[in-house]
Image (cartoon, helix red, strand yellow):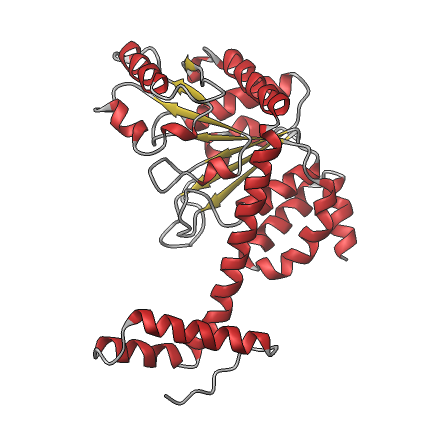
Length: 325
C-alpha cells in the first residue's frame, strides 16, 4: 500500500499527493512511513520563498511568475500558507480563489495550508509538503508565507531563494520591511510601482542594503507591477541568477544543510511534545502547576524534575509516571 502511494506520487498523481498532504497535516506519524520512502526522490526542485507584508501582492507575483515558468515548459508547485480559520482550524483563504487560472493547469499543483498556530510564519507540515511536491517532479516550488514580521522568518531556513515583496504607500514603509527581516531577502521587489512613493521606498531599501557590505550576494531591488505583468520576467531572471550564484559558491549546499538541521530539531520538538503530553493526561503536570501557584515550588525546578522523569522513563523504554508527590 505504501509503495503504491509512493509510485503514484512519483508518477505525478495529484490525488495521491493531495491525500498524503492531508495525512501529513492530520496524522504526521502515520504519514512518516510514506515520507521515508519518498525521500530518495527529492532534492531536485528549486524552492522559492515569497514573503512580505499583507497586501503587497505576493499571490499576484507568484501567479504571474508561475505562468511564465509554465510557458517555458516548467512544472510548478505552490504552497500558500494562510491564517488559521478560528472555525475550522484550516486555511482561512483558499488560493484556488486567488489563482483560479493556475488551479486548472495540470502542470501546477496548488495547496493552501494553515499555520495552525505554528510560529515562524510557516505551517508545521510545510517541509514535508515540499518533499511531496518535489517527489512529484515539480521543477519549481513556491512557498508563499502568511505575512511577514520578526517571528516569521522560518522561510529563510526552507527556501533556496527568498523574494521579499513590499509596496509603497503603507505608511512608514521601511519600518514595515526592516522589522528584523531585511537580512532574509535575496531579492527585493517593490510591487505596485505605479503608486506614489515607489522611488523613495526603493532608495530606502538600497541604502539599508548598502549598510551590510559583507554579504557575498548583494540583493537586487526590482520595481514591478505584478497585476500588469510588469517586471515579472526580470524577477525570474534574478531568481535564476541567484540560484546559479548559490550553486557556484557552494552556499546552496550550506543552506540545505541548515534546512535539514531545522527539520531535525522541529521533528524532535514535536516528538517530545507528544511524550510530555502523557504527563498532562495523568494529572502530574497539574499537580506541579498547583505547587507553583502556591509558591511551594518554582517553575525552574519543576521543569528539571519533569525532564529527569521523562528522560529516565524514556531510557527504560516507556513513559510511565507513577509518582505520587
